[in-house]
Image 1: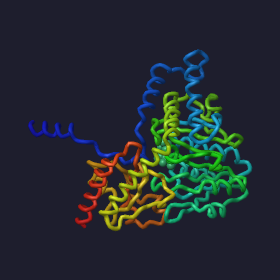
Image 2: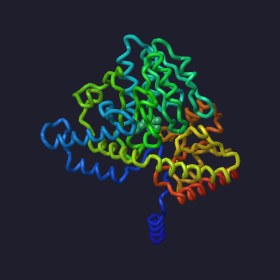
Image 3: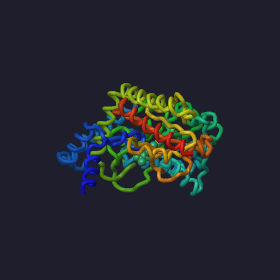
Image 4: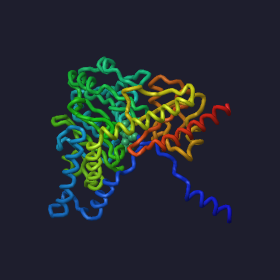
Length: 394
Ligand code: PLP
């Protein structure tokens, strides 16, 4: 009895582990929660209803559409709200290929796309489309020239992610878009990881389609958006009523959409400051780890990388065991959260040419807006201690 009380007391006073997995998801900003609460309790109407509370919900959705458009330099009527980034990617890929299927039969993606791009592309391949998966270099960069070399007259779509979720490498989207455009192909980029972390302008990037995810920049889960440049050929893949111009039929998730609008406003207001804070925390962590772990290897591009992402391989140990041992003090990811239950080599690191030992020692640490210097010290101390224990146990 006494013992169990003592355990209970410890649990109450124990600090939670430091969260360093902001690429998996972010907490919801307090301002977003407040607005979502109002939408769920007071402004609960259906935006399609003509009476007042419906129209209030419609107005909230319109405001959010404007905010999300501003985040990426788009027009409001180019934003389609979806249930998540996966859905936006599916709509982008399946919808454009469906619209172009009479004249085109080829799509191009990079070898390090998230499964939310890879799988719809492979589905299209299974029903007769040709698919080119273009490789990357050691730092995870897709060469625009390599994309250019596989383009064909019947290439409907090129889809290359803006920034990689595992290693953070940022791609040369503007250059790739220019090649796609010259070839008469549609250009899509999955910006689920970069929105809210990097400035984004769809005209500077030159893309026709761009995906974002609310829960990666302090909005809630259950909401994403697809930017569709006016005039881009795209067909719906779901059938129903006329919401979202028929591209995403179904009653809008007003609270989540409003929350994403608020998160976009917050991101626009503080992008530079936020980016700098995340970068400082990330680099502090990298420095601390480098000092104490000889042979630590940075995975991804040294400079052209998301400001919050640090993917490193710890020498001679398993990343899974390392995170398990440091688990009381730090929450982080192996490769990506979606396949964190398996001890297999990450597809991204394999595409970057890593051997199994390097890839299995990899850990993805991603910082957020509130990551403090004290958080970094605690996490670094735990990771270094875990590595020393495992390394000496060899
Ligand atoms: N694209 C990228 C680059 C991602 O990192 C993720 C999620 O981690 C997704 C797409 C899918 O997002 P969701 O699971 O919210 O649909």
